[in-house]
Amino acid sequence: MEQTPGGSASTNAMRSFWDRRARENPMWFVHSTLDYAHPDSDEFWRSGEETLDRTLEPFDVQVTRRDRVLDVGCGVGRITRALAQRAESVVGLDVSKEMVSHAATNLAGLDNVEVVLGNGRDLSPIPDASVDVAYSFLVFLHVPDPAVTCNYIAEMGRVLRPGGWTLFHVSEDPAAHLPENRPDPGLADRLRAALRRRPRGTKEAQWVGAAVDRADVLDALRRGGLELEASVGDGTLYCLLYARRQ
Ligand SMILES: C[S@@+](CC[C@H](N)C(=O)[O-])C[C@H]1O[C@@H](n2cnc3c(N)ncnc32)[C@H](O)[C@@H]1O
Image 1 (cartoon, protein in one colour):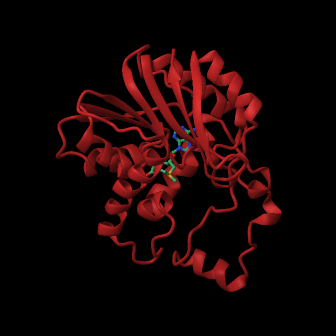
Image 2: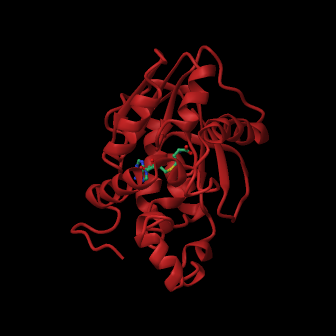
Image 3: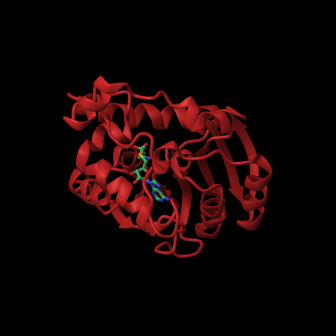
């Protein structure tokens, strides 16, 4: 496992990990059901639309032309692009310079999107009460320190306008993050990884991530002035929460 001063959830550790993944295979590390060797870009962009629909549907909410939206951990812009087609404007934020650079290129044709580099721990580039929707999917489950995830949750409350809402994904399944539950790649797989035919880094802390406790999430929501309205997938790796700013 990578050793970086400041721990695995420091800005440098998270940025360095995701920069390396973005250089290795940006589409696969954002949407890892793609074929690693031959990722299909049509399928990739279609999955952004489908993911957005699938995550909104349980809460019966929509992003509308009146909404300014924040996409936390936007990656190369897969879901950001789908949000931009529905919203007034979108700001994507990511800890990785390389991911931000890919997103800026991928979304260059859209005039209602901006992409910003974050420090991996808070939403400091985003002003207070400046967005209507704060969205995040497939990000916090990879963050190695639950305190960082909880800080982001409180921060989403800070940047939301009163009456705005957040929909975000966390893991509530600690067992899913135990190294022993990660298959140990055999020699052949390690060789393929070395030859760049298989993903690297999937045993590192910034990929393995961490689960959060619901009590800590509720505390973070409270600190952010947010009220939990609904959740699905409680206790699993794919838990979605929907909360509204008071
Ligand atoms: C699996 S990708 C998902 C990207 C995007 N949400 C999607 O579903 O298309 C995870 C993204 O989260 C970003 N990320 C990881 N840790 C982060 C952190 N602490 N703060 C902000 N972004 C982070 C990574 O750089 C990467 O772009």
